Length: 396
Image 1 (cartoon, rainbow, N blue to C red):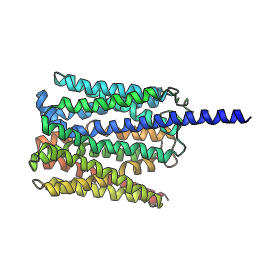
Image 2 (tube, rainbow, N blue to C red):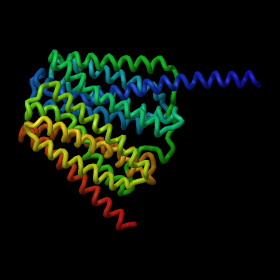
Image 3 (cartoon, rainbow, N blue to C red):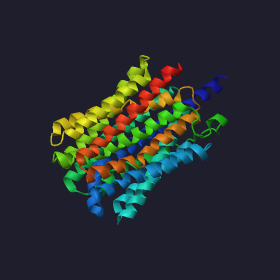
Image 4 (spheres, one colour):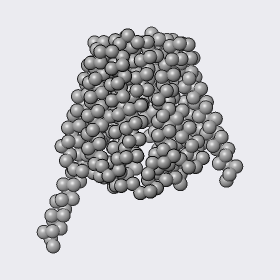
């Protein structure tokens, strides 16, 4: 009996070590996602120049990323129950690495767009697989998921700094891609070494993907749709805005982008403390979108003042921080997991067109008007949240 117990402890310890390695690889994968997402802000003007397209056309790269990501995430949600999530992570990192490599050598704009879709597919697989793997292998799931998404924030802070430093020194996009691709391949290797299968259980009827069936889910889906477009759009264009209006250098614009994403991460930490005290989620959501809208308006009017632009970008990022987790939390109240997944998918669709349209306004009407799009989106979100709060009070 004692020998059997000792053997059980040895097996359990080995299993824990394997899971620790899987968790480390998952954290590295989310760091990669942060690098991918945030580095495109400083890169867009160089993509435009190198491939001979206008800056607003280069913004279609953001749409390509979301097309690939949403397609892959939906495939995992609908069809890939019972599969090894570690293998899905490896497949995602392989796609992302291939997308980055193709972006580095793309000879023309259509090839670059195709590479963006491939990169997006990798992103979608990584997001879906890691958010399944971590809960299946963690004792404290909320804490583990918070750590996972904090690594995305760290990557989002590091991405613009890396891209800005390289572009300021060399003007070579390929070096930016090479560094990000190398880290992706390193992460893939860690997943490969962690040779333990983690299968997602087959879906129960209430876990199968389906459209939301309650008004709250649809209302919060609309908020997320506008939010994803506003958050990713501002993060992608704020560097170009400051370069155009304040004549900031490449690295200064990249640092502003990094500060925006860092402030967003800080906002999420603060919102977690707010929730821990049992405060009203919808009140926080209303205040957050109002604050982000005011900050975006100040940013739009700060043309030429780099200090005010930096403060406004930081304020917008900080106020955006609570919006995603708070909206998902409200949508999840009493809802099936399938309803929450569908609400998030609706929200992610906002990234398909809004950032590109914001770039069209920025180039066609002017930098200030382009940034003001974010303020308009926040005003729409505030109206929807106010309607939700009024409706909730009236229905008890």
